[in-house]
Amino acid sequence: MAGQSDSTMSLFSSEEIEFMAEDEMTEIVPNLRMDSLNFICGDYGPFLPQLAAQVPLWLALALKKRGKCTIRLPQWMSVENLTRVLEAERDSHAFQPLPFHYIEISRLLFDHAREDIPDMYMVRSLVEDIRDVRFHKVETNLEKFTASTVTWKNMSAMEVNVIRAFAGRALQAFYKHDNEQQTQDTDRALDKQPQIPTDRPKRNLKPR
Amino acid sequence: MANYYDIDGILMEEEFVPVVFQKAINGVNIDESTEKGCVEQGSKTELPFWLAHELHMRQAVSISVPTCFNQKTRLEIQADAACVDLRSRCPYFYEFGCKLAPLCDKSIGLLLSYAFQIRYKEVLHKAHTTAFAAASKFLMLLTKEETYLYEAAQSSMLAFKKWRMGGPRLQRASILGRKRKPAE
Image (tube, rainbow over all chains, first blue to last red; front, side, top):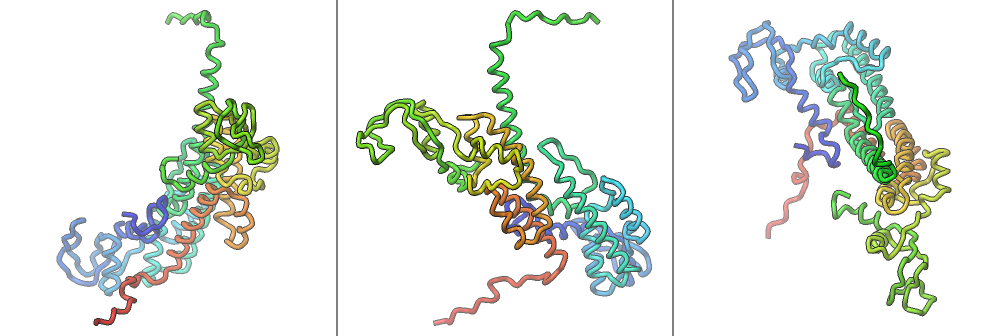
């Protein structure tokens, strides 16, 4: 699976993540009449002009490149929604819920379907801003973590992938040092045991 | 070390540790100037870790704390762990410390985890923000493990930036560029 990436710890390259993002469903409005397409991943269509259909992003892009459809902008990519997300993102420490592949999807749409996006420049700069704010948040979060459990909700695929190698190594190191200490603590506890008087009075259990 | 052939594991065991012999040993010379041909009980020397460890298991030597974990270094780490030049002291500071801690001084473990926690933050900041040229001075202070961390962060960030900028989607297979060998 991860043959492309050189380092053993970063499992996926950005291109591989993009490839996975292409399986997300998008809505298209075809301008051709076509029977349904039967693929291993599912059946799509039939396609009728001006009737919206749900297809994976890769198929949408393939049709788009041939001029056979227009892509409907996903709901979350509207200017209002992005503005709202950006504000919430700036206000709180938590990550706002966005599609798992939002970076990749938005980039693919900016590259291939720019005429289908109203306010293209606005949308693009909003997405970039959101991404920057979130990356900064990731960094401040990374600063805080130790070997204890780490739970960050709503991180996206690309954000995880960028820090995967670093965070993996760091967690391993933290874990190693923590373990080291714990074994020492247990050693110390074992050392101490003989000193504890064996005829210690047993604690009386309270009757229920 | 997980992997027997791990080069860092092998290099790490080459680090010298000061030892004190608990037994007299015949037929070895640790010091060229003495011509006795034996080691007396209580003599001190430095041995690479792999040898010291084996001898320690046979109770022939006792291991004392090497210079990279001495009191001076500890004080420096307590003062400001991020600025201590650990690379010149011991490039395998953490791994070496982990191996050494059960043999001579168990408080090394605490020191290691304290140092790592502080220095980790520094690495994190530098790795994601600073340009490579500006960071080279900082890189001189890092141990091997920290350098790996730094490089991991840098390379994944670079890969992401490269992807975002786009560029040629299709790569030319390396075999296509080659000239065909003249048929003879």
